[in-house]
Each structure stands twice: as structure tokens, then as C-alpha cells.
Length: 302
Image (cartoon, rainbow, N blue to C red; front, side, top):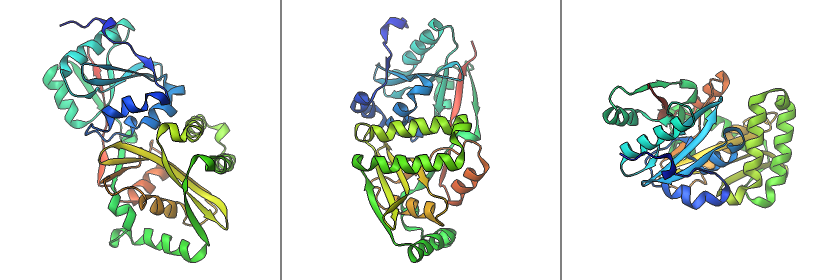
């Protein structure tokens, strides 16, 4: 088996790579938020994300916490050969092979190909929350009574307007983001500071990244915005939701309005991870996810 590192050339990812990369991710059955093209580009500053194509697969390589990691290859072909090549690439970097975004069924695939060669671990804080688009767009049934109440109260209380987020409206989103950061002390927290940098990048490259979004106005002033993009052919990823929390029910309203604009071809909406933040976990669970998508790290033992 030829696993020469020279067989594959990793390149820095950029918006111009969208069509190539999404030709793999959109056809994949994988619904991980990590595979959103917008996320891959917007967080490149932090993870030095690179990509390559090899043997029918898309390969993603980056650094997290000073450790070299890869995503589980995306595509079809001789997976055993491709994984052996990644092992050689990691060895050339002086690192063991570590892969993220490994879902439960993929753990079985790795074990079948390399019995006993990988150690698997998962972290609940990084599981994705998947919802039925129809649930978030209709809020029908007893389990969504509280959410319907928030939406109905908002409608009665505020003169509001929902408009699409387009490139010419980015500046008002940036104004709201700056306001949100002042209220939440972004500059004092590394996590929110990094999130802000990724968000600003996404907004400034909105059309290039292929994003779709929406804005909520009250009395003509922006009070919330959101955006995302398809992850694969049946799952749409919502990557960002920001709102003026002084407006009661604003998050419920922007969530509801945007879900109603997501095309019906998408069965699922992926609203990403909770990162172990207690309030965020409660909020995500309150929308009744149908799947909590566990993602494993697979690390070669040798």
C-alpha cells in the first residue's frame, strides 16, 4: 500500500474553494455542523484549516489546542487506503493520527478496517442539536406551547418586520453585534472574542460563502439577525443568532421566522453545540431536538 505523503497536497481553505468542497459535503449523509463551508472558512484564523482531495475523498486538516487533527474523510472510495495516507501525513508532522467529527457508525467502520488500532472518546459539550424543520417552522403541539406563547406575545407587543439578510444590510448586523458584545463583555472573554471574529468574517464574505439569513426590525431598528447555510442535502445549519435581549421574546421570534424561510427540502435544522454552557443547553433542549448528534474523536493508538 503506497502511503507516500507526497501523494496529497493540503492547501489553505478560502471562499473560492466553495464549489469544490461543497461538491463533497452536500452529497454526504453527514450532518455535522463542522462540515458547513461557512464554518470551515470563518474559523480558519483559529484552526489554520487546510483541505485536499484524494482518492474520491475530501480531507480536512487543522490544529486544535496545538494538536494536529483531521476530520473523518468525506466521500466514497478506498477508505482504508486514504486513512493509511493520513497516518503517514500525521507521522510526517510528528503526530499520531487524530480525527474529529467521527459519528457512531463511523466508529464501527474504523474498527472494522483497523481492529483495535483506535481509541474513541466523545464529549457531550460538542454534540450537535438537530431539529425537524417542520417543528421549528410551525411550533405545533403541546410541547411547543411555551414557544408559541412567546411568538404570539411578540406579535401583539411590537410593530416588527422580518427582512432577508443581504450583503447591503451587513453594516446594521455589525452594529447590533457590537452592541451585543458591549453588553456581554466580549473583549474580556477569549471564547466570545473568537466567536465575534468568525461572525464578522462570515458577514463580510456573506455572498462568497453562500450564506442565507434574516433580520428582525422593531420600529425600523434592527433587534435580531441570524444566518446559516446547507450542510448536506437534508440538513440546514443555523450558525449564528444574535439579538437585543432587552426585547422580550426576540430570540423565539427570529428563530421562528427564519425556520419558515428555510426551504422544505431540508428535513433537519442543525443548531450546533452548546459547548457545555448551562443556559445554552437549556435553551437548545427547550426546542425539542429529535437528534443529539454525538461526535467522537478517534485517535490512533500507535
